[in-house]
Length: 177
Image (cartoon, rainbow, N blue to C red):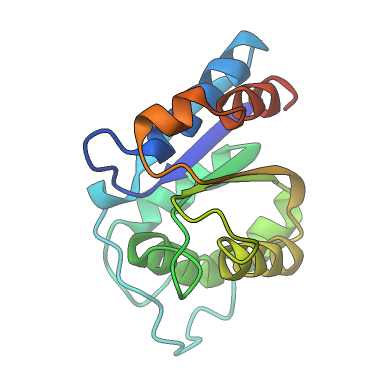
């Protein structure tokens, strides 16, 4: 299986990176191919909503999203690694997700598997509410097959993430792909 991990830009010693590395380790140990792309390495303009694409034609924007689209469509699974925000995902992830619109029909036909990885220093029931809502909406709209989520509550730094059971959970999820 070809697995693509779309991650936000990590700062040094970010706890989310612990989950990404654990997932990658598990997936590779199960024989899967894993590619990690940092969205900060791409120039992606958010969708303006013009709908000139008709949901499966070239976008009017000329940026790096065409390259990212090709990599996504070559994959069998997408892993979204994002910190939760009040809008659900980070601005980098949001820009990319809005642009999925111009290849919506291709994504639906592909039937990709998907996974969500996230960390939050908050250890409250609502820490991931908006993020999970956004992810589940995306999964439903694009006919992705959700393979699971690792939502690491109470992990505000690398040490907390490494000591937590979430690291092992991410590795097992990777193996189970």
